[in-house]
Length: 171
Ligand code: GTP
Ligand code: MG
Image (cartoon, rainbow, N blue to C red):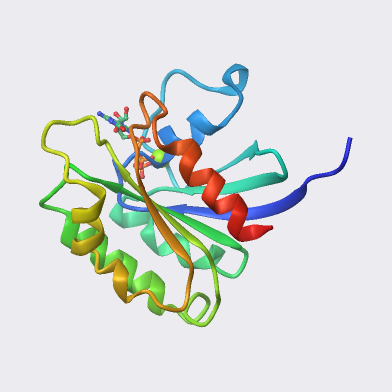
């Protein structure tokens, strides 16, 4: 068949937000793993959509590994940024990391699409995607296309909507 266009995506966000769980769910069911452990450093994963072949840098969100993220910024053509919507205490930390990302010289002046997942929407104390968007001041992002989706990575809910949006941005 036709060769799909290859796209490099950076999957970023704090530890325990659900990055690896989301990327795992986007893979074909026979390639999915059952036990997901905290990522050490980063892993490279692949998944396909109808027209694109994604290579994902699934980064560790742990504080001691976050300094690795920037080494891959130049290579990224899109960003998936994952937030644990139930983690009210660390929302300010997530915002700080997002602001550092957006101000980085390798990111700042590029029109990179950013897909936000307000993940763990299944949890009782999860905030809505609108609330998460407000707390992260996403309305201030003017030079990049962005989109936020509420997701439940355990059930896979909300993921397709997000990836459809990403695919549209990249065509
Ligand atoms: P690091 O690799 O350490 O940066 O974490 P991560 O962002 O990759 O998180 P990971 O995918 O390892 O998930 C962390 C924990 O959250 C795991 O126990 C997941 O099962 C759980 N989890 C992920 N997504 C969801 C979700 O949508 N809802 C609920 N309830 N739990 C989730
Ligand atoms: Mg991980």
